[in-house]
Amino acid sequence: MPISLTKAGRTARYTFSGTSGQWVSLGLTSVTISSSTITLLKPDGTSLVSTTVGTSGGGFEPPSTLPATGTYTIVVDPAGVNTGNITLKLMSYLSGTLNLNGAATVSTISVIGQNARYTFTGTAGQWVSLGLTAVTITSSTVTLWKPDDTQLTATSVGSLDPPTALPTTGTYTVTVNPAANYTGNMTLTLSTEVTGTVTVNAAATPVTISRAGQNARYTFAGTASQQATVRITGNTLGNVLVNLYTPSGSWQTGTTSSAASFNLSMVTLATTGTYTITLNPQTTATGSLNLQVTSP
Image (tube, rainbow, N blue to C red; front, side, top):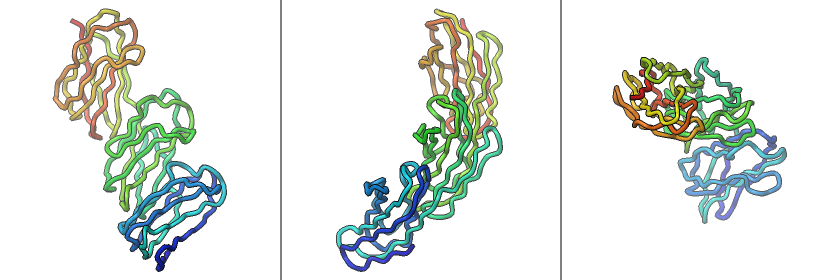
């Protein structure tokens, strides 16, 4: 929708019918107005979201789905005495599914202001991560939404790692929102963690990360007052974050290293129970390492 505002002080208002739960975005292109405020009003006339745009244009989207069914209004208000033109393009999000532990999904965003959303079925207690590779979008935000449409976590680079296991069973949504007027491609790889167990003072266990953005989680049985050291050898993953957690889930020790071999600080285990070691590559590289827990 091309808009021409040739008189100082004039604004423009355009309406559209929206549905509760709908994801929409607005492309702002061919902008010759030096500065203007774009506001999206809800059906009750209150502001849902607002932004300032210059001649570079860009994208504009609500922070979440539309909250109600009804008539929404887009207001274009040039700053001061500015005049000029702007083209508005209202779009639904591109949509698709993510294949948990399956084939990667390629997201192609070719229109300024276009966003994308992808869904997958998650289970309460499940640990997942999302690798972001082959990215040609200069800057974007990737967000994971819970089944109730509240945000779980977000990132702009590398991989998306929720801070906890999935809290509920249901349909999760991943949105891709390019910044400014950027377009391009991104490959999304959704994976569960590599899991297993190790035994204190047993031979090292090989751990292989074969999917972009994938993490690993291993457990071992520990005894109160036992001293333990987590050892990494043969690391081909590059920079990797290794953490040790107590049976209650509290962090005990950890480090980030790209060395081929390194150890966590030796700790004295406070309680008897199942301890957890997490291994999180800090890039989307794949590879392997050997994991061992020793007690002197």
